[in-house]
Length: 200
Length: 200
Image (cartoon, rainbow over all chains, first blue to last red; front, side):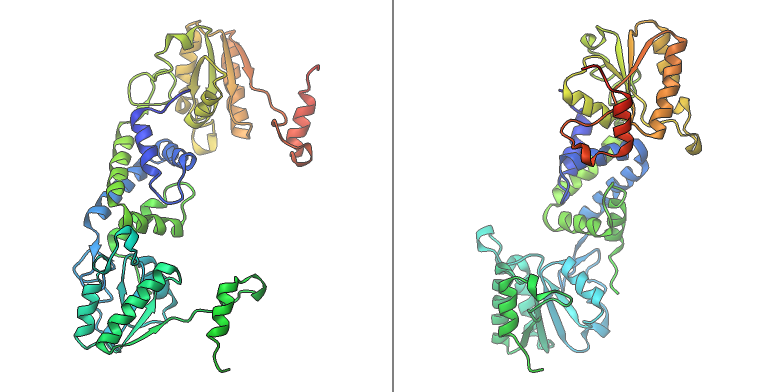
């Protein structure tokens, strides 16, 4: 059976690190770049190197950022009401920003508490968050962590921090998604929606 | 609406050059590398740069190759019967190699004749193929081009080259795929299968 040349094999192996890329897609990607678009391949190589080396974290909210503070943390308008929204990842932050509903600042955990994987409060920057809470400028902290076991555990931990500092803490609503059909919604979500019912 | 930082946006745009990667997947890939695997991201960057710069073409069969001649062209066993198989791309060559059925050499066109896109015989290296045919070592040329308009046109052109040199030329069989169900096979394939029927 034929094998690839060393550099080609190395490229195919390296492409497989991308999420959702298996051996067949990686091979297709490598051939596509080599056949049709070497210039773009070089640009992608340079963009990867630059991004991996130069993108850091905002010193205040921990989102991805190339400067000391991100554009949200440096915007005085976003601090007016003193609300901070805690999210699990930069992708979650982006999803919330795209609703254009929330006008406060963020705190990006970049993960969730997971003692088995050795991820503790320090790894999520909860010491930084604790300091921010201690400064007394925060009027409310909104928890927008994933509704998973890790997300819930992390939410409980952060809620404790808030209670200690007497900061108001809330959590985004859990219930049936808009446009969903009850028939196809899982039982856990449905029972959460019942127990979280509101006066109409 | 929030925008990405410049380097992140540049990385997301660059990732979209990969086949099958849209804006959402590109964003997911960028975040995944930044969050979890910067080391692998750097390796991918280096592998891309090395591959784009250093992978060339075999001087004899035009497949992707880092040396002057590929491992098939340098293997004397593959020249024993003097058969050359003409394929459209290195991926097609690999697919044939994986059947372990064909023991001869290849000629990889790296594309098909397409006058509208300005792709002529020279661009497919057909002058090199013509010289190889003129040397008189080729006993048979097997056409394994795609069964498409461009593949067919290219096959006819190469068949003409062979006729001029009095080299035997054949084409891989077209018909119903093994394991397929007649009910679901398209009409063109089915009528080709009928006109190409063989004595049983």
